[in-house]
Structure formats: structure tokens, C-alpha cells
Length: 389
Image (tube, rainbow, N blue to C red):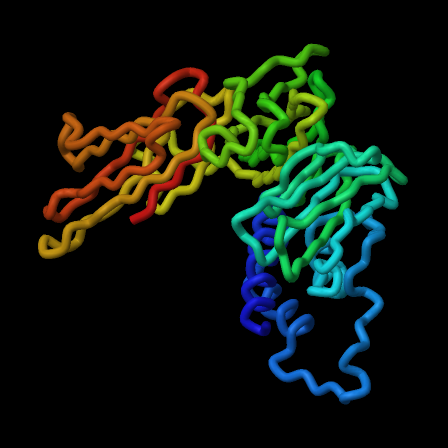
């Protein structure tokens, strides 16, 4: 029994944490520790019970009417699971199982995790009339539920033990918050989320969709210019649940100004957004004679054009020096041209692009000064670059 419970709990916690981690920046920094704490809390290694109490079950076991509570973030939802939010069902329930009624206390997005010891079968969720909504293989997300709505849940068939947890999260983004989780249910039309940069800087976005059959999501960035919103870069479109980095992430070098993220998804889809921002003071050299020493971490904004110059020294002929280049661009790419002091012709030229972000350059085993000229491949290129020795 202990082995079954341990395995069952591991399945549920893995599914729960996976669902939680679908929410970028969910602040679940130690999921394995969390799972261990829950397992210890629910199934201690040693349980001492008096003979007279062996047939007594906690009131929280085998509950068929469950209130679903709302939380401001996924971290709080995880703590709720660790402190009683995971409901346990044993053989007594499965002797004559019935559908479990779940009722959201507040409106928002519903997250449901069902784990039974019969892994070959799927559970299910039903509407208030007990009409099947969907078969559930561990996790289920519904973009929008209302307070007081009733749903029903079934475990997989032929289970002897089961675990269930459900919670609701806020699903309307009331303004992008930097370095935090922002959630927005689809509206079947564009939704707008404004952010401001008070200096030139680098802004990055991680946009994810959480509903498997909720349809595609598109997003783009626009800047306010003379009373009009002007689109910067590409409009990205990705399929539901995509984890492809080039689909769900975007990075921009942006000048001071007012911008907005434009999302478009169906009413059945739920999107999460992590917005990060860092300001950069412009410390670049536009002439070779004034080249800055490496290492370099810089951005190109949409309105910056001129090439920049850097330099480094090779002081040994025995060990080959390498330059590691990392970039992030919404479109286009960067060009890195390497010159040896005293020579007009470059010794190497490498380019990065949206698909090829990283490069390594080997410098000759020859003592001297080497210069790196950084330029944009296209006029529309904007983003971040880093050169490390």
C-alpha cells in the first residue's frame, strides 16, 4: 500500500508541478522539495495508530463535494496543495464511486489535476448537467469559470486509490507587471497591455498558452508614435501548448517610450506572459581608435544604426583565445567582423540570426590587438548582444 501511495503521489505531484510550471515565472523554485514535503505530510514513513482508531477516517478523505478556491499566483496555489488542497480517495470510496462535485468560489481560470492508480485510463470532467466536457489525462485547464458554477469529476476506471486537486487563478491582466506572471484569457479579439520604458533598454517576453484545444495565439509589440500605434518587428503566431522557443519568446531593443503588447486568442484559450526589462546606458565607441575593451553587453534599439567597436588582446601563442557571442533579436541579426591590428582586411566575419543566436570565434595564436566591429544585418534589427572572452 505504501508503495502504491508513494507512486500515486509522485504522479500527481509531477503533473501538478508540470501544470504549475506551464505558468512562466510561477516561483516554484524547488519542485522536488515541494513534492517531498507533500509526500512526507500525507504519507509519513511510520504511522502509529491505536487499534480502536484503525477504522476511523479523516473527514477530508473521500470528499464528494469540493470547494475550489482562487489564488493570486501559482505559488500560493502550490502552498494550498501542500496544506490540505490535495484530496485523497481510498478503497472505501472506490467500492461505490460517484462523481465528485467541484464548485469554484470565485471566477477565474480553473486548474485541475486528477491522479488514479490505474494509469492506463483517463479521468474526466463534466458540466453541471453531468455532460462530458473532456477526458482528463492528469491535468486540465479551463480558461474561464464563474463563481458558483458546478462541475463534476470522475477518476479513471478501476482505481483503488486516487488524488485530486483543483484551484482557480486570476485570468485578466490589468497591466503588465515586470518580472511577474501576467495571465490573460482570450477574448476572440485583440487585447492590449501597455508598458513604458523611461530609458533605452531591452524588453523580453515569454508568452505561453495553456489550453490544449484552445486554438492559436498571436502577439506583437507596438509603439506609440504621434498618436498612432506602430508595430515593431514581426507578429508571432503559435499553436496551442507550443513550447518552441522561437514561438513563445521575443526580445526587443527599445528606445524610451510607451509600448503595448497585443495579444489575440480565442475565448477558450488562456495565455500567460512574463515581461522582463533591463535598462542600458549607451557606452559604445563608433570609431576603431576609441574601441571599448571586451567584455561587452549591449543593445541596439530600433532607431540606432551605427556600428560599434571593441578590442581585446592576445598575450600567448600557446593557448588559443576564443570569443563567445550571444545574441537575441526579434528579426534580422548581427554581424561581427574581426580585425587584427595593422591589417585592413578582416580575418573573420560571423553573423547571427533569429535561428542562430550563438557563435564562437577562435582568434589566431598570434600576440597582438584584435578588434571586433558589431553592426546590424538589417535596418529593422533590434535586440541584445554579448561578447565574452
